[in-house]
Image (cartoon, rainbow, N blue to C red):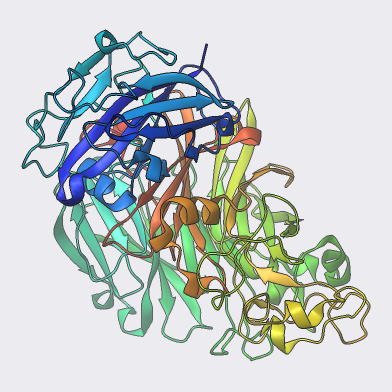
Length: 636
């Protein structure tokens, strides 16, 4: 008996009869959905066979949605479909066949009968399977279905407001509507928004955008957020000498803001407010404090001081170039100005540059480790004992012992081999659209954001592998001299429609020191990874992002970025919803959110991609758990 069944069909009311879609339900875990396919039988014309083959996997209880196109579906339902396929281009008189290994295992409608006027007619309406029935094999059983009646959706603009809405996720019984896991609830236009932090007591969201203000958003009605107030950082002591706010964090009613100095190489500061916006004090930290976060108990604040050079592209050789560090602040909440500040720096690694490079840590030639290491983002283990800090340009993670404020380890992240199946990439913006191929290139993970979680008593961390260069270390493949032994087809590879346009590292790849390139290293891996506490990779999404976008959201796969870093996974957050752990990854260039179930870290699985619509380039993600949420539901 099939583990996948048809549980719903819809012929929508929007222009063009959109959305047109099929709902499927997984009755058991399905490791490989490619054994299943769909075909439509139009106007009683009989079977057309399997017209679309599914991909990926599904867990027991998942609902999957196959739509004729994405935009109309998302407009009507508020979330994106799992798949887009012409097989779903159905009218209310068309039948649907579900195939397993080439044989029909379930059917909606009679394939040899035009459905107009039939009991199963769903013109401008829908049909949903009765829970507990199916699969029905090749013989349609109308008694196993409930119908809206034809024209029930006429003049309706969304399922949420429809008088007879399609009952999402009910045809299979209890389960998780996978594609509707994320749906847009509300939004607010601001002058910019990069990083946010939520205070559950006041139900306010504090938002920074790199400017000199903090936007305070009233989130008490998540569907209709409003701007409550604006905090002007320039009016506080020293506020006339700041570049802007880079990060914000909230814990137990205390708001901490990382503020960079007007001169990028000067020390920055952390400015504190209470949740009512009243100034509480400030502390000096290292140069360019780029991110900060509290430990779970709220007793300690950690600050990533990126400490870029004075160069316009952060060139390591341009002076001054202050050392990167992590400030470990033991908070005195009674008088924040009396808090104890310790600095976890990298001078202990000076002199070890050759050994670190041999391990795969990327250090610019002629620069010491302590100066070249630039902390980008921090996550803290659930027990509050360790911090994991991304060193983006160095393709590494720094592990900090919080109790001693010491960097105990530098974990080299390695590279993704784009020549291996499942790791392809579109490397050119001159190849007339999406063209994901295996290529003799290695991707430097170079993560931006990082988030930690626990599974089976072990600590794991997730990285969004964006990639980042410094200008002076970037070159296009077409401009390099390739080793003739390693790249005998160099002329072909260096064509603009192949690898020629791809931006790669100009300081990595000459393994024998003879002046030509034996390997090619791209910036970022266009993926997210899961690592254990020792720095071992247990999962990587490979080319999932580009493949999912190309197949289902081709208009969001910006081919103009293919020669750089593709979709650019930048932000990541993780949390428990129900009894499952989920990761959410923001794609800056594709303007959307990828959702994965990471309950089993080694077998993470794709759940959904949600386009962010008019909200472009997601930077930072914040997950509000249900027990802190204004409406009792988890919010992203």
